[in-house]
Picture 1 (spheres, rainbow, N blue to C red):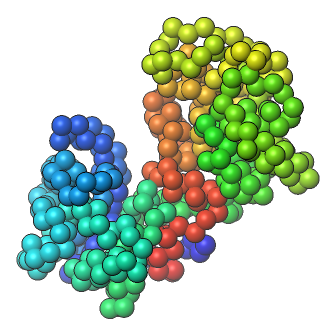
Picture 2: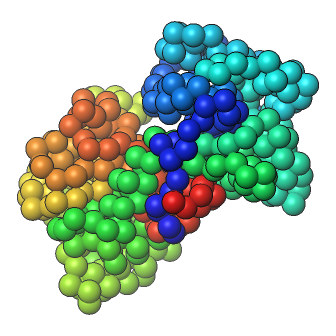
Picture 3: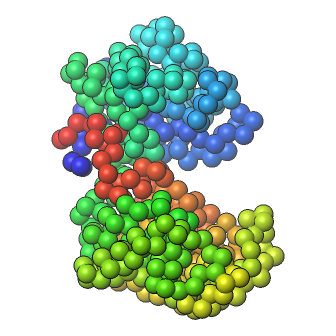
Length: 411
């Protein structure tokens, strides 16, 4: 995938209507936004276009919208938050049709520097359908509202939705720019280039529950990195592949042979594949998940009894992984080392976060649970980059072409 994309710095938006696809899929509770991270992340691109004198038209999805348009999944609270943060009114177009007469009239009345926010793009069922199923029509309606298009929604960039990638076809047809925003550019710079052109030694750390979720990531990173570190629930399938007893630990029986192949591939390619050498055991999974009243014991990775389950990496493994990180120049981390939501079982994840915080290497956190863990444990400000996309960052690490990135103009 070509990663040298046209950005908002490569054209001047003065007097032009610019449609910006943002990721405003924020958590809401009783109509109030409980985490504004995604809104704050979108501000630099929006401010740049305002300062150019552009007419800024924002769009985004929110939620899954399973039961059709509804007020609970309206973007109205986002318009309010944006107005406060930008210090100017962001006019909200509440129309459920997203691109209807109200939107057209509002865009026609815009002055330079004005900002409007369209209604939730998923209120139009065509947003998520395949282009040939009328997604084309919705994409064209979006393109009719603007002169240029900017994608700044990395969290949605792995989906070929009407507002993410199909719209660019129609903007391009009328001679408009199709660019990426600052947030997308940062993701491309860090995640894309870290994997394609890493400064070596390149260490990749993968955790999380299932091997199945990371099959292609493991395979791709084993070709790109110098050292691959495995932790989390997925490590037990690797340990089983080595012939160890794993007790009641998370195990994907169907992926044991795959893990054997990956162990052999690492050896054949001269790559280090690090697996846990000791593990923290519990009698049964904590309920509720954050219940601190659980008994634990640490055993060697090849001595897990049949009636216990592994729930975190042990202290020897923590030291081993931290040592591997010390030598790195680039580190990518996706997935926690254990049940980090529980304070008793968070030590492994915390140790890896601390190792990344202590290194001078470029440290990239690949979204999802690892981003949540780094934020929760207080290490966010020590990382070079924390990805804003869970699924999108995983697909980037797999080496996949992301529709939202691919659809932007090459420089």
